[in-house]
Image 1: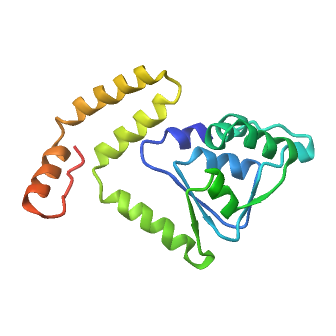
Image 2: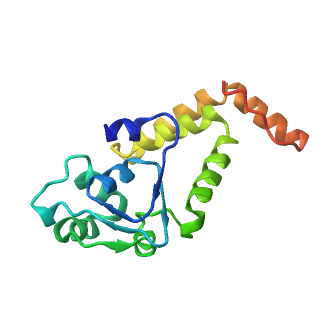
Length: 172
């Protein structure tokens, strides 16, 4: 199920508040961005109870924060603050607890103003390139760019730039 979140064509933002542990962490890792309240605490917790991550924690966590730090969290079950997890690269934005929902909505609103075709294509290339050698990833990006240049969204974006106005992307 979390793979479907990761592969969803639209951006998915995790809003983390309170304690995020085990499966909650695995769900957040499947999202494109993690926005956490400054009071949030994050842990894996599987090892604490003799369990094993089965929804991507042992795969996505090291890709996000590095192998050694992932092992530390996985093996110990220690919880860390959102601020520390931002420094480690797990959390993308730390928000004031009272502003968490508004901050997530602001990110979503900003993305919604962009070309839907471009954002979907960028997400796909970024996700797909992770398992490829750099040269193949660069080729994939160039191929996607060439296809994208023929879209109505590109034409509208360039026209808006030339006209000094905000673009109105048709999504094609």
